[in-house]
Image (cartoon, rainbow, N blue to C red; front, side):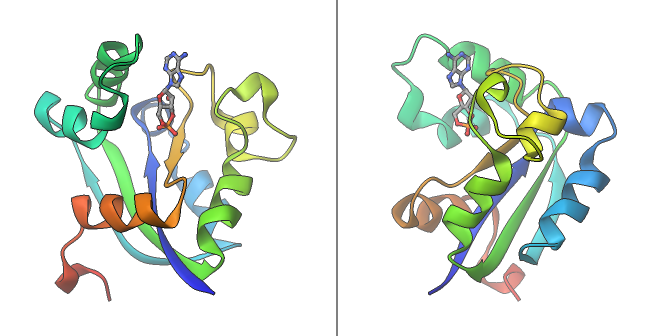
Length: 137
Ligand code: CMP
């Protein structure tokens, strides 16, 4: 099934100059339907990660996600959600498989280089959070 999913290159990876390499890795697997670079406000990051609002790491996550520019992309392809999650690797880079984005570019569970929607229902909320219909060409 052709799916769309949301990808974020997080502030750590943008700061380190790894965005281009990450985009090149993604393009080997999936089509980039839309892309933009932005700097989230605390309110925007808090709303995006609202599902984690009760978690002990929520404040740290919002601080980190607003610490610099990010690059958001809508990706498309056959089984895009699971394929992009496989490409990203485990949330904790210490547990991520060789060759995955987090193994290559992430430093820790909190600064883990990339984000991807975890299910079709999540993608259906996360893609429109950043992209309007007109931007999804
Ligand atoms: P992400 O895929 O963006 O979804 C939620 C994020 O919360 C996750 O990646 C991590 O960056 C972050 N996260 C998850 N667990 C922890 C933790 N124990 N400490 C700090 N951040 C975490």
